[in-house]
Length: 252
Image 1 (spheres, rainbow, N blue to C red):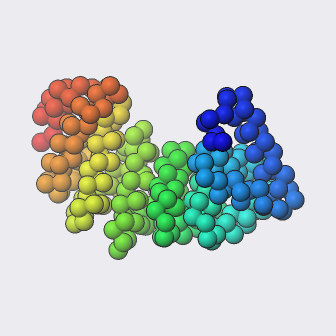
Image 2: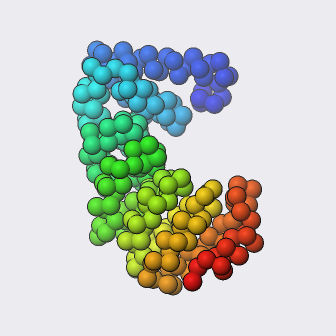
Image 3: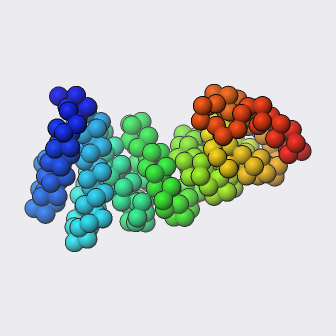
């Protein structure tokens, strides 16, 4: 039975059970149930498990080294779902202590399975929101990696921080302005659009784009910014017409 096929009361009970069992296993240095939850076919069960890791890490200081040591073992498991959940668990820890779990993301970026690599992107997003300085410093070293997928994943991963603090990631994005791989360049344009339609971000993005030298890419970015205000018109602060006018008045 899947997580969301249960009643709300049953889900609350199941979450409490998973949290209790994971805590108990860490105390006993036994990981049988943890691995079962980490490898569950239901993504919501796996999510409950990695969120539990984050809660236990925060509340049980004495168990922190044991938790990280266990994750160090799990990250090399043959089951990609366990590796994926391990990355997500490390992401919960990285909200507070990124340096302690940085090596998980160094490894996860190059995992053979796309779901593990996607977990890295998701973790960069959630960590970058609350612990951006070390996360962005780490991300910067991969912006010019020879592997185009790494460049794309990093570009995508830092997007969420930009939706609230565009000034923090725009200098990093600018380092990709002369990217020659379409898949990476398209992601860059997409990220700029996703940032620009958020409240208070448009002026910061446009001002920064005026310093970019690749005018062809900027042209694509401006078109995307205008278009995204139509696609997300129910969520945008400004109308597409207002955005067009703002760009005409402020981008020279």
